[in-house]
Figure 1 (cartoon, one colour):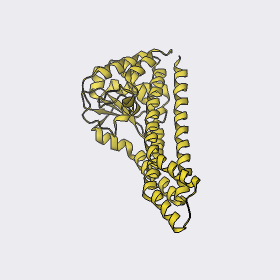
Figure 2 (cartoon, one colour):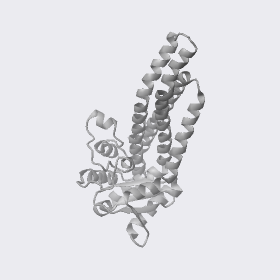
Figure 3 (cartoon, helix red, strand yellow):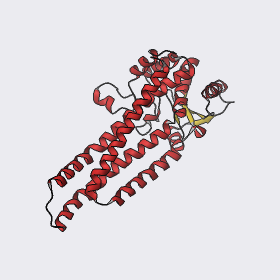
Figure 4 (cartoon, helix red, strand yellow):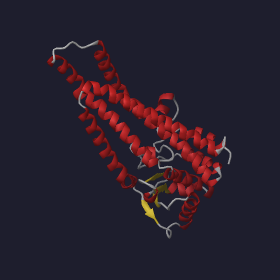
Length: 302
């Protein structure tokens, strides 16, 4: 398998998952709409979800950098690292992002920012110190791939969709379920079999849909990691650099002190050092198992 086919395969997988997501929302809108009998609630739910997600998207880089305790470096403070990022950006055709360092012995990195012009790359001091030039180049290329692939935008869209599904399910329990019964009594009408079926389906969806939405979001997140791996390897033309870096990161015993569940999905590898084995654990993981990523990198041709 070549790098190009690996990227294409994962992009197709991502779009399939997004289509499934949209299908779920359409189904929810139809079923809940029949129970609510008030489309205004749906419009408010969408507007509220978009507003909150937009604010998160616009200021996410500043929030994450503050939470991680990262500090910006310039060309004078670390010329070799600065030139490495600059050369890769020229190759990728991307503007030079701001470079931040997290003072921590743990080995990790992440990229954030609302678009390539406002992008940020953050690397831990342990990563910069423990990786050789080719390995560090592979990690930086992976993070530039996230920037070039607009993964922050995709992540925001998914947040909007998950928030919409969750709000819809929550509002169903607050208004729809009880309101349905009240309307039946007010109109002194018997509930038809079809209406009862719709109500039961709405109850089931209100319970299952938020969980399904989160699982789809996590599946897309894992798929984007594979895409960033392949795109980064395509950028450096040396997949072994990133594969070797991932091996060192996986075997590193240090846990990133500033990491938490809210920001864990941003990093190149899960900074919480949680076990990735077991079906349920992998299902709720933001990252694919690092062994699979290494195997994929070493199985593709440049």
